[in-house]
Length: 481
Image 1 (cartoon, one colour):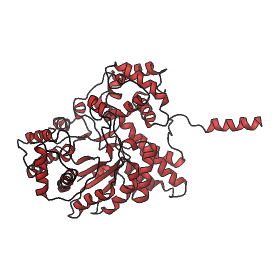
Image 2 (tube, rainbow, N blue to C red):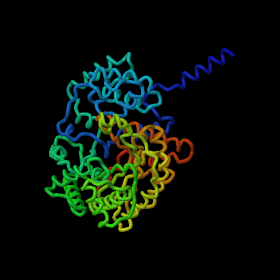
Image 3 (spheres, one colour):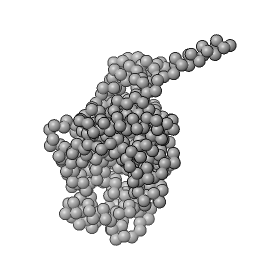
């Protein structure tokens, strides 16, 4: 009996994989081949992120690992709060080393959390560090990272170049003067395209806290006093043209809820004027305004052959006390569970009925809506455009292994994963490009599993083409007018 137990134990040791080795997340021979021979070296098109274009234009250098790693990462902040770390060491006035040390205390306990993978991929790829971060290795890793950060050749642009990034789509407000995008475009020494994305959320969300003040600022940019809805649309179109003139070919909307309620322009004009006067709007009025404004913007995008992104289903600023203390986007958002299908269908159809539906990428934050979006695509494909309507990659709380796999499965079973435009970071950190590697490994493992299970032939020529298209070629083609 003892010999058999020893043999079983030995087999267990042999089969146990090393943590994050070269074949991390790749469970079959086909997956290994697809990743290393086809996916690994493909360029990156990060078509939606929240990087600061000023930091790219000025080729920002960083003081230490905390500044670049923890400075604005609400994913890390959420895990630290859950571990019981005081806010002083998260967004407060603790020293940078104290904040790094606090995160290091959390790291060994992030088992099953994608943050554990992301963080160690970043340490490995950008700093050559193989050890795992913990209180024991904290000081050593701090020193080694900072030595590289403070040395030659480590800056915002260097991270972009070393990650093989060819395109970056930032997220920009219509009132932005795009001075940093203009400066980058003129710099012939930098070969990555950094383009603005038009994100008019503050215009669409008439119920926003500072809607009136924002409309005033929007008018000032175009030297126009916006007193009615027609003028608002005129100003928006001028701002959109300015963005297009400066390289913009993609737009973005955060739709916590998708509204659809028919209304005439006369009705919406009255609602707009009511909001400007400071009166409280009804839910019906908010929905009418949002609906017509989204349709009007969609038509503008279609006319300019732009890509429209709709991010659906975030429940934001849940913690009122912390929102008042720290503001938005600091880790107090979650998944909403509102209904999506009917309103989204009517919104897309209202644009399609006049053949003015632009290329559109749909993202859902609630995985219950995967199949909704997966089937919605097929309703509005056409026009000779492969994958005109896209099911965007697993977003935010779904950009982990399980979330990506579920998104891929829904897309492949209900649509064409071969036409998928792939991964984006949706991040504020220049180190987050390793998430493309994470995605590519998961993609190759999913496709490789289908092959190994006899569900698709082992035709490496077509498989390799599909993988490389999803990693880069599809989105590169999709963004062309």
